[in-house]
Image (cartoon, rainbow, N blue to C red):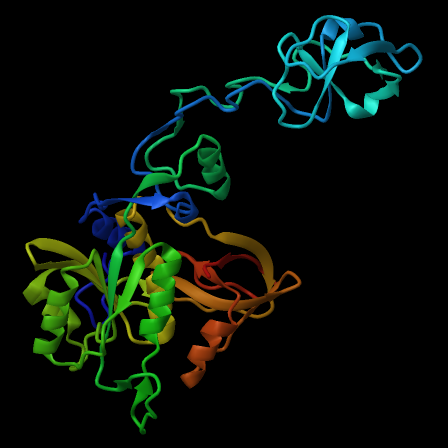
Amino acid sequence: MPLKSGFRSLASVEDALDMFLRSFEPLSRIEVVSLEEAGERVLAADIRAPRDVPHYDRSAMDGYAVVASDTFGSGKDAGVILKLTSKDSIVSGECRQVHTGSPIPEGADAVVMLEYTEAAGDGVEVLAQVSPGQNIGLKGEDVRKGDIVFREGRLLKPSDVGLLASMGLTEVAVYAKPRVLIIPTGEEIVPRGVEPTPGQMNESNGVMNYLYVKRFGGVPTVHGIVSDVKEELAAALDEGASYDLIVTTGGSSVGKRDLIAEVLASKGTVLVHGVAIKPGKPVALGLVDAGGKRTPIVCLPGYPAACAVDSMVFVDPAVKKLGHMPPAAYRTQKAVLTRKIYSEAGYRTYTRVSVEEGRATPLRTKGAGVLSSISRADGYVITPPDVEGHEAGEEVEVTFLE
């Protein structure tokens, strides 16, 4: 049974997110970037090796290339002396000095490490036995020409990019990052740098979400502040249609000045308005029909703590789906509560905590202190809807969303 609380109903977090993510598809735009810009980007096509890696037989050690059978039976007390040569090929009884990465001379099939040799006149005394192939990196040993090295959809790590560079590639095709328009709304907010009068406050949710979206993998743009006027809000949503995702902040509840859900309903579809999450209940999710397409939209509450939580819960997965990125994997840690956490049955509750030496302290968040509490928090204790709080001394899991 949906919860009633100033909204027609409250969807569960899982149902709301599932409905929203199923309403749009990942982006099809592709761009070509240099390898220097390819880290943490998602491949838009399979990568096939243009050549073998390594592309020649090479020494894996500093030492001497030898015919392995010449060293059989040698050791510290019974070395074998080989003639040192600088030729490009050797025969039995000869050796050639090599360094890590040097090509192996024709006829050689192993490398003796430098520390197992000693100078012996014009030759080299080998004091260890090696077997064929020892200390040699064979052509194509890492990657064979034509092999699929990485599949489409892979999120490239720095080491992946290094492998691409070793194959001679200089650029790759990746999916475009989602472009996100962030629209701060509200009569009471004024731009940063303007001294607010009583009843006003400097806009902060826009810049906070700008940085969140960058972290999530998107390309954010912050719109100018929009007043609580239907026509102005509608015009801003029309502008957002040229982006991949719209995020609004403020005006998402059910008060007289909370107009964004009503405006969204007139411009497209409200999929969800009100979710059983604390803080963050007044979030709305939907689609804007404009510019010949349907653009997903997340309408975040203006209350900073709720805005932050809903951004991490709803905006992050949306950006990642649009950009073909894997879901976020947040770090967690067990900790013991220093005092009780209260939560309401039926709501998924995000409680901000500070963590020190395995102990988690819930942060008090009354009044204006909510802004500093977000900054002071190390992580969140996420209480599921079927659990009513946690007692002091209880071990809980802290999730480090930031």
